[in-house]
Amino acid sequence: MPETPESWLERARQSVAATVLAPELRQIGRIDSIGDGVAMISGLPNARLDELLHFDGGQAGFVQTIDGETLGCVLLDDADGVKAGAMVTGTNAVVRTPVGPGLLGRVVDPLGRPLDGGAAIATESFEPIERAAPAIIDRDLVVQPVQTGTFVIDALFALGRGQRELIVGDRATGKTALAVDAIVNQRSSDVICIYVAIGQKSSSVARAIEQVRRHGAPERCIFVVASPAQAPGLQWIAPFAAFTMGEYFRDRGGHVLIVVDDLTKHAATHREIALLTGQPPGREAYPGDVFYLHSRLLERAAKLSPAKGGGSLTALPIAETDAGNLSAYIPTNLISITDGQIALDAKLFAQGHKPAVDVGISVSRVGGKTQARALRDVSGKLRLDYAQFLELEMFTRFGEQPEARVKAQIDRGQRLRALLNQPQFQPLRVVDQTALALALTQGAFDAIAVETVTELRARLPAWLDAQAAETVASVEKSGTLSEPDRAALIAAVGRLTNSVGQTTP
Image 1 (spheres, one colour):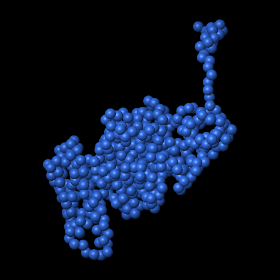
Image 2: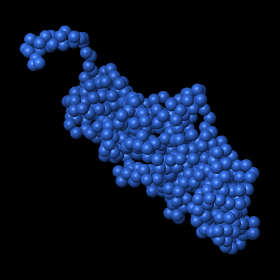
Image 3: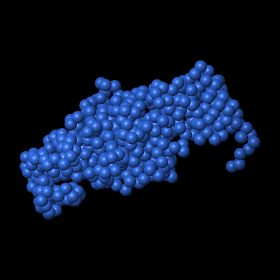
Image 4: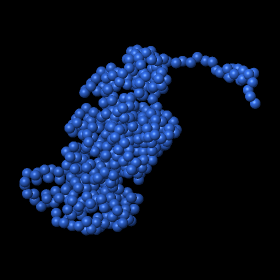
């Protein structure tokens, strides 16, 4: 039935009568100047730090500095169309990012907007990017391991759930590759992985994502990308947003591994924003709060107590050095904040040692408590033996003929070095690493050539599954190494060395 003018008028009257008329308070400021992704704003006396602001063109930003009557606002969107004199509206809210299972398997920016061409993210809620770190009473001991599948890490510098382990080294020494290997190895665990790229080249980020999709479990990963072409504000909030996404799963009893690639570029972005907003520069032109910036971020990584659900958030931040200078400002800060560092050496990388981990200056301050029990029982002296081998090898370069005991120690050290060289995307299980460490310490590799150690390591997982399936199942189930299991592993590796072939060392 068509609507008559009278019925339409009556409906309009009812709509007007139902409208609640009340005063609406809006805080409106004005842009004084704009440039390089930073706007100086006046006219918002009640604005607070980190408050979200909206511009007339639909862009958003957050308050970074407050100086008298002027605000320093960092834009989160493209500055095109934002001009001096335009209006700015306060929101009395902080920057938030979406959280929830809907993010798994997706490539998003720090605000949760999809970058993979897929549908919009269906999330449960929005949480602030800045959250307080768990209190001491809410934390638990870091004793559960995070298996990276990389022998040099799991055997010498065990990583625990809730730990913060820095990966540091020069440019192009394999830092991202080491972190991606750790993500790939979680395909057989219950750990959710988050990879956050800050100011990285698009080609490098695409390669890392493709590697995880090809070799790992991308359906349990979140990729947070803030490219150099995006606003500096997005790069600044990227690690904070990623931690908020991870804390959603941690607070519900889950386990999360976050790779931050890298905090050196994040510090450079913070310095750029600080200088543009007029903050006083300090050492190397960084503002005085750069240490607090990263400490309040990394302190959010923790293992929660059973009363809080028992979840964990493990952080693998990456930092870049120049010419191996670990005493530079940002690397020094990060080393003092984290629970240890995996240092990569450019010379080792150039010599073909991959991963190029410098065993001498790398350390895990959590200790062996996080290491898998079976592996800990057989790898206790590997690091000391390797350090002694490096010293002895250096002395033998002077031409002195070593005695038989020293020569045997050098020969065994050469085989350990060969075991530590591990190709990418070839992770080892705990039982594989245990068998390798046990066979090495028992001298099972002493009779084979160093060149064949690589082939033996590559064949070992399939060989153990075929020759010692019961032992593999026992070690994986119990996490310990009994005497029968020890004997079975040594016997299995011994048969493998015979099949590879023996040569005179």
